Length: 217
Image (cartoon, rainbow, N blue to C red):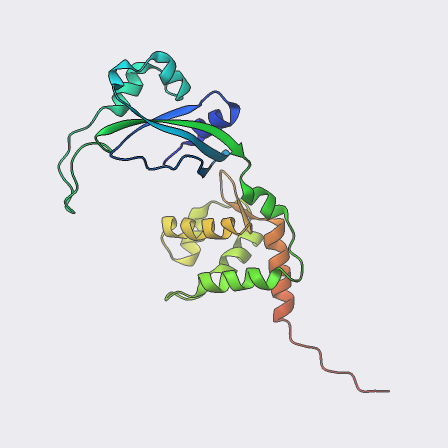
């Protein structure tokens, strides 16, 4: 379920407590949580709106929509041609659902990225990154982490150009590193987290050749 940043922040503030969606069947589970730009949002209840024409201005405000007319326009089915895969026309589905929402807590990645790993955790991070690296195009995690460390808050287009890759797939890759608590996203560019910096320091030390044994004097 897509939740925009302004709506997510309003859910956190308690001014938005519900959402409306046009679906065939509910696409969220009661009691489930979803990560949003403002933290975790919990789905407290889902119910079908039997008569969408009876929604009110208050319903619109509680959903973060400016007025009832805008809400009705959002929920109105839009006729369109069936997809090439055989899907039906229309927006979302045949039914309108009310989803009750509440803020469930901070983004768990925020605490994770501040958590400097110990000697027992560092190999586990390395193993997770190795699994991300195990794709046909070859390893990529170390290069991106080092570039972000050395070029904080630089627009992502520069990183994509440097790597000779498409912007959007690269952003998906960086979100995988963020999920491990290794990077921090900003309005412009990225920054290595304390957890990510500790991992790179450990990886750099691991790459150093062993010093030869000194002869006994």
